[in-house]
Image (cartoon, rainbow, N blue to C red; front, side):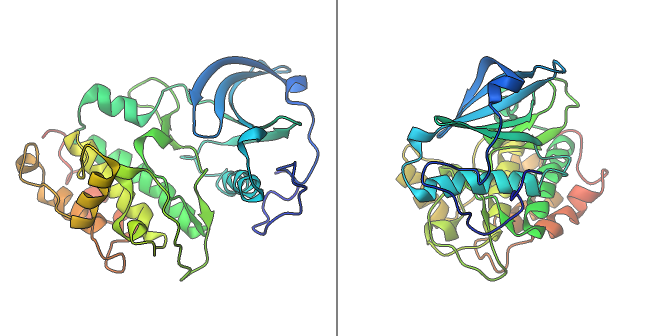
Length: 298
């Protein structure tokens, strides 16, 4: 782990650097390949480790997009959080960080199987057994985050990657750009996240780590039905739906979904965060724990 990567406090950097230490030049160690994806701040490329020929993903963040000291701190925090979670088998591993005058580069494990989002679009929906397996992985990451005092704040299918294209590929969490460290009882007020997945208390601007369980509940609803529980033509319309809180469990395929699955959905999409099930409790729910409870068909 690089020097300082485990520190939770703000770091003493100049206004022009993200990392509190100098690094070698990325291109001395890696060959840059094709573009793999584009995010809000950075672009991800294939990169090849020169000494070994091993392939990785490199997220390159242009410093011209970092407009304030807070933006620099956000990137540093993302790096810290990825190091905190680096031993978790369902989190994309960070291999190294590099910085020059123009970019900050995060070299990470390559996941060649694409986004969970794309697989949902391709499949339409999942069987209960398949959905239970995926949610177990997703909420396992949430539990690991919360046990380390990290709130993800942007759980969505686009932020989970499969390590290979095969059907039995491992699912891994990526993109901790909106994640924050929190202390027990600490309250947050800034509205962040992605419209379909954001919890009602985020919109009310007073929330804590329970928001991650809500977002995972939205993902579960989509896995089982192929559509989001809250939908409208505009962002404001989606937010109104979330605040109204009406969830459709009558339309197809819900009459054919097990009561156990619906019980877990209700508990994850509980509007009162104080009453909402915790990540650990999700993992202990019979629908997740017992293979015989989640059917393989509809």
